[in-house]
Image (cartoon, rainbow, N blue to C red; front, top):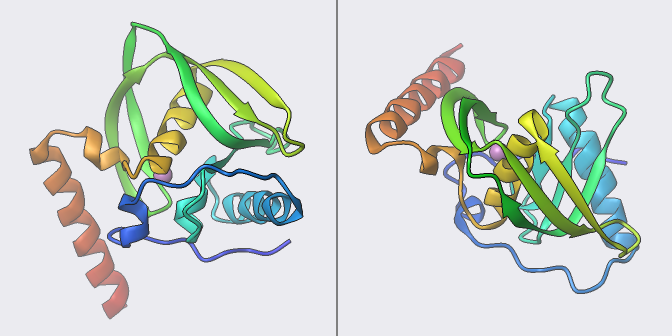
Length: 170
Ligand code: NI
């Protein structure tokens, strides 16, 4: 397994809709494992392939405390959303150290292919539902800042620029 380089905003690959995977082979399985290692190392609770420079519809997630419940999702799609929306703070490995409240459906159903190409479905609520929606957004070129008001988005981007300047001068 290998740790991959995480692409950060405003890398154009983050804005590009990702391509569906048509064959789940060893290359895809290796990418899934490398993405998990990269996510655990960051550390993060979810990672989408465009964030490591691969414009494919592939996502990994693990919201467990012990980091022992990895989910590997190929071509995931949301097939149901609850009407109830909840707001909670989100961050993103592509926007390091930036957080903002995002409103999303509290629960979702996701249909996806596992690493063997078997179709599965998953009902999720709370943090897992939020994380899945955030990662699937990445596959459509959507970042969590795109779900904020223009004012809040520019606040987050200003903070990001400032944090980068500090990091560069440190
Ligand atoms: Ni993200």
